[in-house]
Each structure stands twice: as C-alpha cells, then as structure tokens.
Image (cartoon, rainbow, N blue to C red; front, top):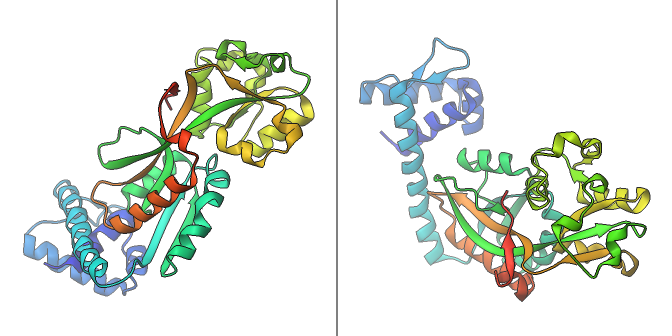
Length: 311
C-alpha cells in the first residue's frame, strides 16, 4: 500500500469514472486500474462496484476512501512541515470567495499579499457558499472566505471580522428621512433582493423577518445575482436594498447620501475563513488571515454593540 494508490481511489471516487480519474492523476487508465486492483488484492476487499455506471464505492470502499483522505492529507502535512523549515513561504493556494464579498475585500489585501510573498500563487474563484463547501470537502479548494458560522463538522472555521449591514435607498424613499433605522422601518414592498443561492439574501430575509412573507410579495420575484446591479436598480427605479459595509467603498459622495445605518445593536454578518478539517497549508492560510486582518477597519473586528444575523 502506498500514498499514490490512495490518491487514485480518491480520484475515482470524486470522478466516478476510471478514465476521468486517470486524466486527473496524469496517468494512463491502465496504470490507475492496475494500482487500484493491487490495493484491493492487498486489502482483500472490493473498493469499487465496477458493474455500475457511474462507478460507485462499495460499502467498505466508502470507509476506506474516507480514511484514505485523512492519510493523504497528513502525508502532505509532513512535506509542508519540512518545506516550511527550509524555505520562504511558497506554493499554490486555491481560494473560493462569495460574490457579495469578493469585489470589496480582495482589493484591500490581495496585491499586498502577492508582493509580500512573490513565491506564492493564489487562484481565486467566486462561488456561492454551497459550492465552496462542496469543493472544500472534495479538496478542490484549499480555503473559502464566506459568511459563517456553517456548523459543518468536517470544516474548520476562523472568524475574520464582522461586516455591518446598511440600508441603501432611492433619494425618493421616505426611509431617508430617518437618521438611523430599524428593520421594521423597511417597506418590504420596496425591497430588492439577491437571487436564491446567495447567503446575503438569506441574511436579509432573516434581518427583515421575511421568511413567512417572501412568497406573498410580488416585488421579491425581482431579483439579481449582483450587489452592484441591486444598487443600480435602486438608483434607476427607486426602492430599497441592503448592502454590506465594504460595498460603500465604491460609492460616490452623492450615493453615500442614500445610505442609512441601523440603530445599535447593528446587524452584521460574520465573515470567516474556512478549510477542510485535515488541512495542510497552514502557513499559507495564516499569512492570508494576517493580511486580511491588517486590511479591514479595526471596528470590524469587534462584536461590541453588534448582532450577528444568521445565514
């Protein structure tokens, strides 16, 4: 038994196809099949049911693959320990980040991080929370930056900061007459939301207590996948939306007049960095965390006079 064989069965489990798994591992299908067959012979069990298409693990195969993932991750950890002692920070980091955060947080830290660590390559992808979770569990991502807590045992979470929600309204909306607002002040018939699949939409529904009313309101059918589109809809067609605090950095002075803050305790979303439980690239992640914490305002790191809105 060797690490390579374990990597092969993990690949087949992920791809559910021997040819695709071989391509993923950069070996021939014959080599991959032979190595897996030798492992099965050594263990005296069938790991995969080859009679089914797509191929699926057997009952015992599921347990073997789960343990194989832990062993492979721990083997990577050994290499990282040695590399960390011998050389400057280097390597590749595959990072997923939710779309409602990416355009506002990334510009604050990514260039500084890359200049500080020239031997590190960062591959960033915008993804919904659901996709980030799935890819972390399949080891297709190293880390995700998203709204937490997730309460998923297989994942580790590190809280980064707490981002305040604010009201953004058309200049013709009555709510702008108020200096500070409550959730009850928002006319839900004027509210524009993100489309399904975005955790920010879920948080706004919870903030405004719209769960039971969502399907009753015609306006809630008018949704988009972009915060910038939401803002432009409000600017052009009147109405109200909820923005995360970092999005205000892109507003001009006129647009900032259309922002109203909530009364304390202000509603916030918790932003965290999430990795798989048996994660390897600890030094890389620690460096990213430190860079983010250096970039965000100090007041965003405290929960004082704030109330976290559930996802």
